Image (cartoon, rainbow, N blue to C red; front, side, top):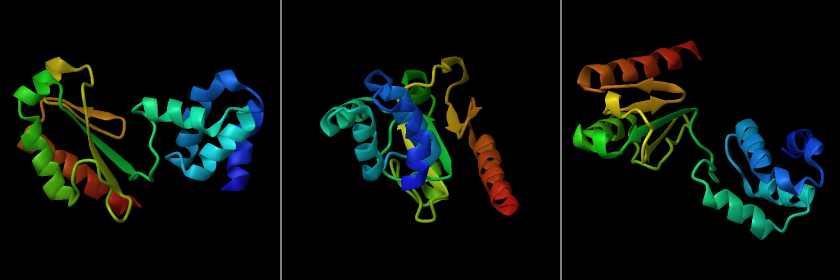
Length: 155
């Protein structure tokens, strides 16, 4: 990991004002922000570790534990809530065998809620990796789970 971090961080030596892009780049490369990376970011930028953590914990986009290869987000905004987000979450929890906020033991899936994805006209909405599924009902959930199984076969 030390070598990967060095490659990622070398262009940012002493660039304190680039903290958020640095955090984004490290997370993009590693999948999350492990403690070792946070320490190295602080050293590289010259910022106190407490400042690096303060910024990273402020934004919901940053994660400190390893996440699944597939990240499923259930929108719980008002429109999605009214149209059955809780039922959808129950189905995903049952199908994936994990609770909201968890990652499967094999690191294939992470499941979480998001306050809003900005697609209220498509409510209820589920985002899997970068794919948005709108007006999710039982038939669309079946398609999503079939897509998971198809991806697992390809690997």
